[in-house]
Image (cartoon, rainbow, N blue to C red; front, side, top):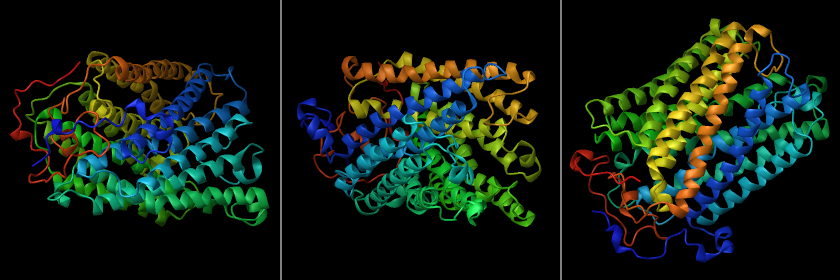
Length: 543
């Protein structure tokens, strides 16, 4: 049984009568999720503007828009802002914060004060990093590769590294909070194999947060220590080992790919059954595959180092493991496809984003297998082929999943409906703009254009013009949701408790939910995704 959504009439968490001070001191998980939403949107805008500047510079072979140093600082700013301050926290910090207690029938996360502290730590880390960017910039690239980051660069590497170090604590605290909440605060009857797949994805992501984030945090701190105290850790001039940095960096950074993509997979696993009116195919396999991805992801870091001098035997092992980690991802794609089969498919905006995710992630995953193959990786290593692959996973996958989740749960988050037709237009524009931006880069990389260069042979210009044109379309597509989400907060139609006719405890509360979520503790008696028990003839409420 679930509580009656209409039984709770308390003021909702968005009520502005609480005042600014109550927002800054709130312990409500929904408000903290909203604070993260605003914060990471700012970081997304900063990273996006840097990307647009990069693409404009690449319009001409001579790189006329920026000098060499400025270009290096610009793509570093793009990478640091997008990876550490948008992609890593986006779905866990925003949608995870908002939804996990609602999905498991809890009134809040296990540690509300710790949750607020994690947001302040995120803001502090982002502020330190932005300070480094605005007072001269950083030219090392987002990977901070040594020995350039320890000896060769005269830019604000130490400040940027400290910002990333501080922000890592935000991820650790968030992961800890989610793990304890999922273990200890589930509603009566909500057994492990009744958990929503979004919760399973967040659980697996939290494991990576806890185990992986300390490694990258200590690694970038060691870079700052070496620069400040001239202690030989990574710099060979001081007796250090630069390859050690790569091992430590990629031991975290490859699992970090799954920090970014696993939550998006959880979002898609919620959207697909809702808009096909089908029970999810292979629930147990999808749930277990999330844990398998999280654990296997820690075993494949060496495939980033095929050209770094590691032994052939080690490279063969890492190549095999890289192919193995693709299996649980493929399980998810096959199960989503099976759920679509004979479904009563609706093409509302969340579903368009979910379908776009499947297509783009599949391309990204398959090209990842190319990079896991020794012979081909040596040819395309550090070329635009890698850039295209990475963005098909991170932008085509993680961002499409994030936007799909925002569109799916926006009526629950805000209590308002956005203009559905404009949301569909935005989804199509983003899909087309993305492919026009990044598919030519596969060709550029295979032909040999190295990444991080802004001066290139004239024969590559046509493909770069296509890519820049696509980036302009993509940027416009990303701007639209920001506009109509903000518009809907004031002018949108009032949303019902369950505008999508969806299954799940989060839809059993008013939109937006009251501060304590549930008037009484819900009791779960059914398995998840019981869409066969919902009348498919009921109309979906859309704007």
